[in-house]
Image (tube, rainbow, N blue to C red; front, side):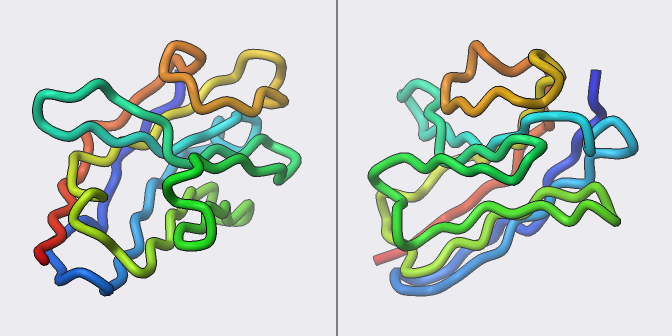
Length: 125
């Protein structure tokens, strides 16, 4: 298991930016990690993922606007979100998995075994 805790959420106007952070501890360096979001009444969906080798994957809805990255020295996962839209509203979760020794690249919630508590992102039009 990887201990995770997100921060950086908040309220912004459409077109604005936010940066989410998720410290992952020493195990985080060996994990595949991802960002997910869930809006009220909707299923949790994958936003972006990164494996331990730095390969990334994005949902089509955020390509060109969001960037996932990891700081190996700090074992921290980031999500830079730009040009935010009202449809980006939701609770954002950081997730990690050590399966396949951190080599899995996935946007499927079922592929992840550790989850943070979430941080709220609200975008107003």
